[in-house]
Amino acid sequence: MVPRSSFESRTFTDATDEDNLVAFPKDIVYNMMRMWQGALGIAYQTCMVSPAYVILQPKEDVHSEFYNYLLKTGRYLFLLESYSYGLTSDRLRLYYKDFSLMNLPKPSLLEQLKVTVFLTAIDAKIQQLTKKKSVLEQYKRRDATHF
Image (cartoon, rainbow, N blue to C red):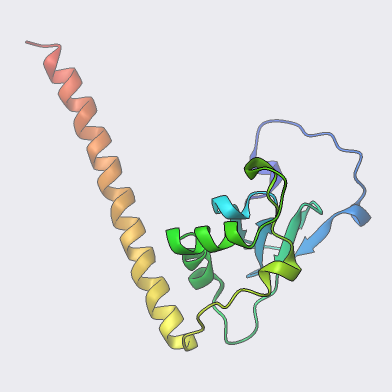
């Protein structure tokens, strides 16, 4: 989740502040219409979100980043879809009452932190390698034009 001001475009809305919800740092916020596609994120600062979102406030023994990773895995995306309701697949919604019925693993806070640190390091390495690949592809294209 990023501040709206970080984008160039302007948005106009008829919604008042009372129509929106407040998410606080470390809250997990998910789009009930797209949760089954992994549409969730963590609020890193206090922000407003539309009523189309559900805000999950973590308890003291819950690390938001751990669940951000967990709920985007294939197995959990499948489960999120199976707990969602709608007439057609593109109209599925995951309401909190249904989300709350899911059994999620709850390792110790220390274990959650260890997993998160590991996965964050893996993500950083993947980003580094992706950038390196892009640079090498550009170099290859440039070098190919000189022959």
